[in-house]
Image 1: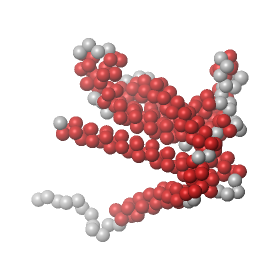
Image 2: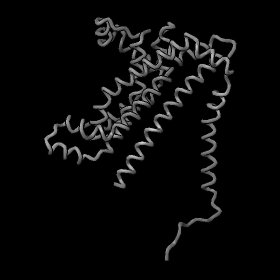
Image 3: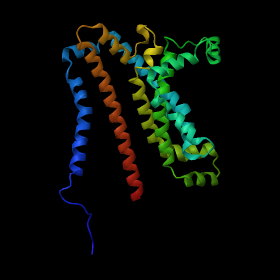
Image 4: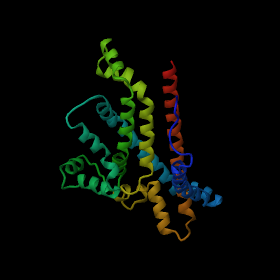
Length: 277
C-alpha cells in the first residue's frame, strides 16, 4: 500500500514561506521600480546627452571591462586549480578568494593606497616605474579588480568542477599535455560558466562606489558613474538629475543581469540535451 507525504492539509508552513518570499521580492523590486519611474522623461533624455555623464559612463565601462579582462587572465588558472587539484592549504586559498566579499569597500581602497604608498616596497617599485595609483585610472582598475575577482573565480571554478575529470584523462591518454587537455576539453565545456563569471565581475565593477571614491581623488576625469551620481546628489538642489543618472546605472545593471540569465538558461538547456543524449 502506497502512502503519500504526511502532514495535515491545514499546515501554515507553505503559505508562510510564500508570504515571506513575496515580502522579500517586493522589498527588492519596489525601490528599483520607484527609481526607474521617478525621473521626468525630458530630464532623462537631457541627462543621457550630458558630456559629463557620457564621460563617466565611458570611464566606468573601460575600467570595469579592463578589470574583467585581468580577472579572466589571472583568475582562470586559479579557478582551474581550485576545481581540479588538491593541495595543502586549498581551503585557506578559497577563503582568501572570498575575502573581498566581506571587507568594507572603503577599507579596500585604503589598503590599495597603502600598498602603493612610498612606505611599501611594492609602492616604491611602482613609483620607480612611473606608475601612479591615487587619482588615476590604474588605481580605479585595481580596486575594481579586487571587488570583482571573487565573483569571477567562483563562477569559473563551478564550471570547471562540472567537467568530469575522466574526460581530461582521456585527452591525456590520447597524447594531449595538461594545457592541451584544458584548451581542448575543459575550457570548451566550461566556457559558459566562465562567461557568467565575467558578466558578474563586470556588473560588480561598474557599480562600485566605496573603494573607488577612496582612490579616484577629486578630479572629474576619474569620476565613474557611481561617483558622478554622488556628486550630483550632493551638489544639486533638484534631485531629478542624480535620479536620472541612477536610472541609467540601474538599467545597465538590469541588462547585465538579463545577459547572465540568458547564459545560465543556455547552460541549463545544454545540460538537459546532454543528459537526453
